[in-house]
Image (cartoon, rainbow, N blue to C red; front, side, top):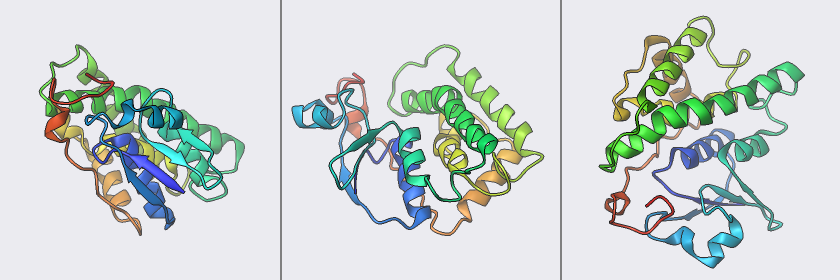
Length: 207
């Protein structure tokens, strides 16, 4: 199993985090998305939309999109409940993460750290996402059920760096983050963006 990933991507970090929590061995293939690595024909064969992460399985099959990869890796484990409602609730949080957390925290953070102009309204989306999470976590330790699931892994990926986007982490969310950090196998290896991530400094689909 090979993971094609960019070290500074929260979407890639989520996958690395779950692999570490599962104790799953894999080969990591670094991809410099601002160095033109995703613009090659070889990368397009892995993922035609030229994004990271990509999970390449031993039989040559590939999976893209962090939520799909997390779901695949967690299948048959406690990280993805088998019970029908809980299973659906996990996917509900995966959708929330992509729309509200990545869109309202990950995107503003990227723009702030790479000297790009902010997008109007994005921080308000992130602030609202954190407030909703805080309300939800005030009454429970995990997003779904009594233990951690890939919902927690996915949301943590970008939520934990909210201050880098200019957002404050509310108390219940902060306590939840500490519970995640205390999990056996936890890794904190989200790298900073390289200099080539700045506008005009590299070659990528992001400009």
